[in-house]
Picture 1 (spheres, rainbow, N blue to C red):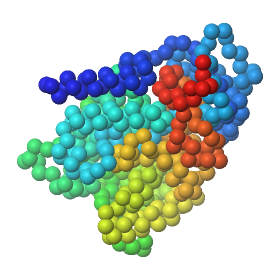
Picture 2 (tube, rainbow, N blue to C red):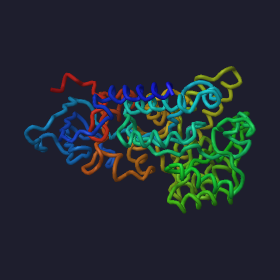
Picture 3 (cartoon, helix red, strand yellow):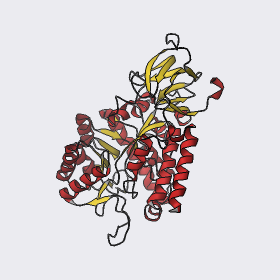
Picture 4 (cartoon, rainbow, N blue to C red):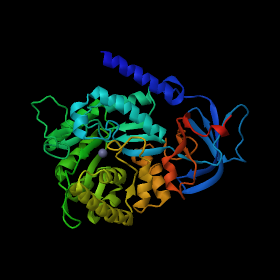
Length: 438
Ligand SMILES: [Zn+2]
């Protein structure tokens, strides 16, 4: 009982500290934001000296500063020469994970403890500029992500707008069964372990009943990487099983996202018509062409791979990691050549929350233009989440989810790692440009 009282006090403190208003309540006042540059991600152009008018939580007008009339009494936030962008959208996060050995988190930390950390992680991501996120599984914290999503939506705690998948689905002995769960022992597995079509159907129905916005399935298992010529990804489900999963989710109006690095597991996922392939390290041309044809998104998650290699323990893990990076570069070049749709996703959780704007820099290092990388983390990500009418660009009618950075990110992509200003739904949650404000 004491633990719970402590948790509630703690949540209250966070909510007050983030934006000065308990519960992060929406300001109903009209605000005008002036900026030196504004990135129009829809048309792919940087425009100078713009003013954005906001009424309550929505944008009402965007135009040249000289042409936008600011009514008397409206609060003006002058961002000086800073660049204004739409709020960032990370389509692959794990709010219930933190850096460190995963067995300790999933087997030894209580769901309550992990939920408290998830609350802090959500705030860290928001402060970094991420105003919307898709969570790809709690990894042993049951469906606590549903309550996290709802608490943020109800303005009880600060954080990004969320879509969640609860526990995710794996196969017995597969990707998420790496601890070798023993059902006789009372422990929560990293994902629901299912067998066959009926098992998949039952798990999907259960997770959606619990509040999942979409279904996450592990379609490939542990990769066996020996050399750049000798590597293999282990498929987890048959084509018939994946088709059944996609149709069962569709029956309830939901979509399926798959963890798939490559090989047959990725191909059957694309054939079955999932809506996103996560990671996709080694996608072959056949799968890439299927993705292009069907409009399936690739969510590349470069940061987590680079983090794992940078933190590899021992020479064997480092050598293997370097081969994975080499293969990633090669296959991502093919993905760009084929022209598949790409949405930004970092897989943050195994590396610290609030640092994942690094993904923009990696996307550029892997061959995307700065503009394409930013579009992947704004307008494309909003399209993937089917929230394009609400977020993803700075346009009249959309929610006022905005970020400002010092430099021009088309010339210096790293500037996105240091947000100076963050607004979510018309409420300023961070402003490090005080000198320019009244
Ligand atoms: Zn993940």
